[in-house]
Image (cartoon, rainbow, N blue to C red; front, side, top):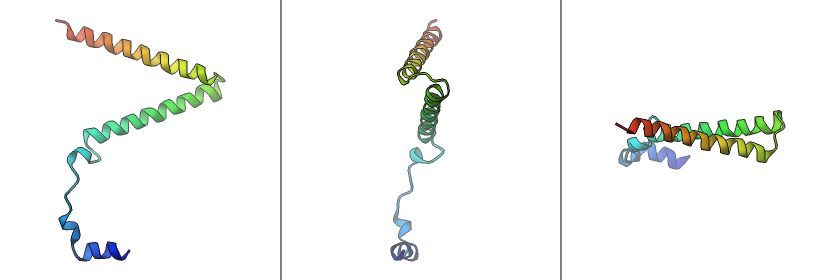
Amino acid sequence: KAAFINFISDEEWKSIEPVSSWFGPSSFLMSSMSALFKLSMWIRHGHGYLTENLGIPVWGSYAVFGLATLFLGMVLGLVSEALGTD
């Protein structure tokens, strides 16, 4: 507590460099990290729903998410190929 009070009263905070805009809460980098975290939480809840509510075995849930990942990759590949051709 004393160190913090001295930090403020001695104005040591003036010598600290501000955080780069890349690491600010509204930056693209931090927004992307937030989106990935939200996606991982959605996947976790989806896994729980499949295994607990629907009674699908754990390996079945992994298979569902694996197939969904492959399908999404295939769709994104086809879209990028369609947009990339002249």
